[in-house]
Image 1 (cartoon, rainbow, N blue to C red):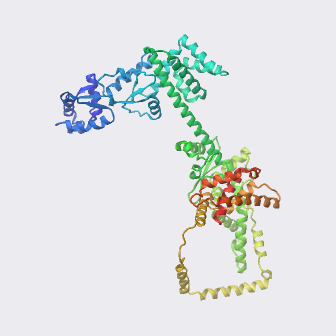
Image 2 (cartoon, helix red, strand yellow; image 1 turned 180 degrees about the vertical axis):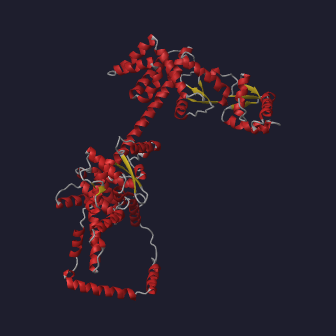
Image 3 (cartoon, rainbow, N blue to C red; image 1 turned 60 degrees about the vertical axis):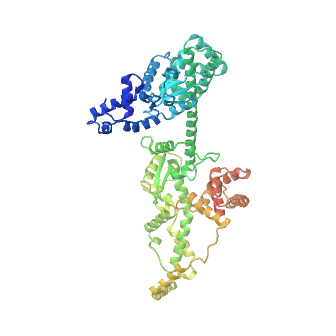
Length: 637
C-alpha cells in the first residue's frame, strides 16, 4: 500500500491485519507513530504524527465518527477501543459475491454482526426508503453500512454501501427465481397469476417463463415493460400471502421473504420512474406541438413558458437536461443532404429563435403580406411630403435604390422576417423543399440561386406608390411651368428660413424643452396600474419589431375565413364585441398585480370555449387573438 495520511484508510488496513473490527486505541496510536516515522519522507502530511499523535488523531477521528465510518468505545479508558465499520464493508462485500454465484447463500443480517457492535455505526431505515435512495443516487465511494429493515419481523439485511445496489436487486430476483424453479411452486404460482388475469393468460405465461428461465433479464424487463409491473406486484403479494400462514420460518423461508420485500420495492421504484418518463415524454411532445403553432418562432424563454391543456407549466414535467437534449437532437439530427427538423436563427439584437423548417416559408409569406400595407402607407406618406416640397429622392426613380429602401424598412419593422430572409439556411431549405416537393413551398422565394427582390416579396411597385403619392398633391403640382416656378420659390424661402435660425435661438429652444417637467405626480390608480401591466404584457408577448396592432391584424386574417369584405368585418366585430363585453365584467374584479399572462390565458381559454366562439374552426389563432385583444383593450383604457 502506498504511503497515505488518510486515517480512514489506515484504520481499515490495520483492522484487516488484525482480522477484527475492534482495535485497541493505544495499539493504533503506536502503529500510527511507527508508520509516520517510516513514511514521513514519502508523505509530508504525516509530520504531525511523529511526536504525540493523540491530539492530531482525535481531530482526524471527528469527521470519521460523524460519517459513521468508525465508533470509539471508551467504557474503560484503559482499554479504549475503535470499531472500524469498513472491516464489515469488505467482509460483507465478499458475502454478496458468494450470493451472486449461489442463490441459496443467505443475505447477511444484523445477527451476523458482533453483539458489541455500536448501534450508531449502522444506518438503519425501512427498506422502502433505503432502496429508493440507493437506486436514485448511490455514490460509488459510499462507505456506509446499511441495516435494511424488512417487514414481517424478519432480520434486517446488512448491505455495504461500496457494493452496487443492482447486486442486491439481482440477488433478490435470483432467490425468487430459485424458489419458483421448483415444480411445486412453479405450477402453483403460475396458476394463481393466470386465474387473477383472465384474458391475459399468454402474457402471464410469457412473463413467468421469461423470469424463471432468465432472471438476469428480469431487472431490464422491470425498467421497460408496462404489464410487467402489475404481474410483479401480484406475484410478490401471492408469495407474502402464503407465508403469512407459516409460524416458524426456516432459513430458506427468510431468504425468500427478504428477496420478495426487496423485489417489491424495486418494482414500485421502476413503476414510478416509468410514470415520470412517460410524463416527460408527453411534456416534450407538447413542447413540440406548441412550437408548430403560431407564431412558429420561439426563444428559449418562450419555450419554458409553455403550458399543457390544463394550464399547468410544462417546465416542471420534464427535466431541464431532457429539454436541452430534445432541442439538441431536433437541431442536429438530419437525413443525408437535408437540414435538421428544427432550425435556429438570430436577429440583429442577438435574440435566438427556434423554428421548424416546414413553418419557415409559410411564416415568411405571411409576414411579407402583413408588411405590405404598413410599408406601402409609410413610403406613400413620406413621398407625398417630399413631392409637396418640390423635391425627389433616388428611390423614386431607381429600382435598386427602392429595393434598398424596402430592405431597411423590413429590418426596422420586422427584425424576425429580416433575419429569416438573410438566414444561411434559407437557400438550402428552398432547394430541399423544391426537391422533395413538400407542402409549404407553393410560393417560391428565389429566382435561381438569388432571393427575390424585396419589392417582389412585399408585392410593392415603385411606380404605383409614386403615382399614389402624386394623387394626394393639389392639382397645380401637375402643371409643369407653374410647378417649376413654385419649386424655385420654395427653395429660396427655405434658404432664408434657415439663415434666420441662429444657433443661440436653437439653444434657447432646447433649454426650454429640457425645463418642461410635470408639475406633480399623481398616485397610481387602479386604471393606471392596469395600463402599466398591459404594456408590460405587450412587451413580453408581441414579437420583436412588431406591434400589437399588427399582430391582431395578422391573427384576425388567420381565424376569420370570410370571403366577402362585409362578412369579414361583421364576424370580426362580433368577436370583438364578445371580448369587450367579457372584459367589462372582468375589469370590475381584476387589479394590476393580478393582470398577468397566466390570468390572460385562463380568460382567453374560458372565452374560446363558449358556444359562439367554438364555431370558429381555427381555435389556435383565435386563442392568441383573444389574448392580444384583451391586452389591447386594457392598454387603451
